[in-house]
Image 1 (cartoon, rainbow, N blue to C red):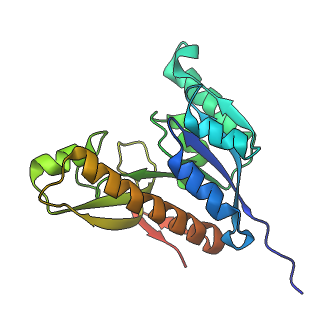
Image 2: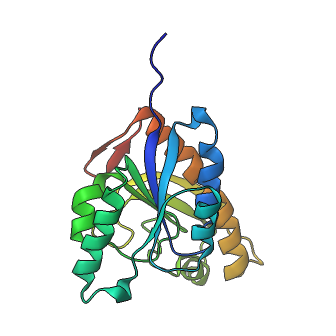
Amino acid sequence: MPEPVPAARIVVLVSGSGSNLHALLDAAADPAYGAQVVAVGADRDGIGGLDHAAAAGLPTFVVPLKAYDTREEWDRALTAQVAEHRPDLVISAGFLKLVGPNFLAAFGDRYLNTHNTLLPAFPGIHGPRDALAYGVKISGATLFFVDAGTDTGPIVAQVAVPVLDDDDEETLTERIKSAERRQLVEQVGRLVRNGWTIIGRKVTIP
């Protein structure tokens, strides 16, 4: 019989409740998923994401920006902490800090983020609000590899979420979050099981 393929190693970065992390942990409990979360990092203490990690028995690390004199020092420290866990893939699961050149040099072609609109429309931290203000009829979520811009990296996948007439920012955001979570789990599984290539802006999963 062929040797089983070792599970891909994933480091997840969080800044909040960790709902996307929780979904990934649930998926990774099935050996067929092809990945295991090996560590969870954060930019602050006392958050739900770290509680999820502790409950799962995972190593955690916290790299607060305010602990460093410059953003470059913080970026180097974050890069070193993540590198210790030898990840095949790094996932921003609601991580609210922009990484810098050191991090991107180490992990740029394997650092995933998810955004709550259909990029390139409405980048930034107020995506659903901006989409509602513009009056779009369809929004959604985008999974992409991070580059040096703001929500500008090569797109892995997108899922559409209709905007309802009675939506406000909260209701639209919650429906997008549900679709975003399902997409993240599905596509991370595809990436780790099949591999991927990035040529220019095009991401291909065999």
